Amino acid sequence: MTSIKRSRALPDVPTLRRDGIERLRCGSPECAVRAARNARADRYEVERSDEANSALPEIKRWFEESGLEVPMSSPEELTAFMKADIEKWVQVAKHNNLKIEMQ
Image (cartoon, rainbow, N blue to C red; front, top):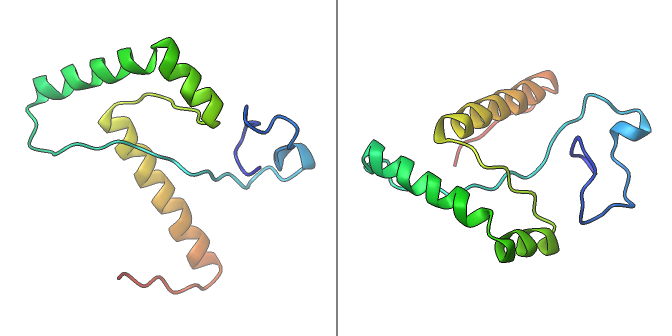
């Protein structure tokens, strides 16, 4: 388990941190995106709707049964997360003399 905390879906699988590997942190983020042309007011309305829907008992149950942990965040928070994650992996590639090829 390479995430920082133990997965609810795999409670018996230890994290690498538990085994003494502190610096490795990775996961598989998922996100829903919408067209950038949405008006800012519309975007906030959609975000509130997403938050409300994700709190519905049947949706929460589906997330839990699927093993998904779904933190809600703003587009700005997602952008900051993605930039930091890309920079982290760029540094890993540089440190290991790996060539990054864009396709």
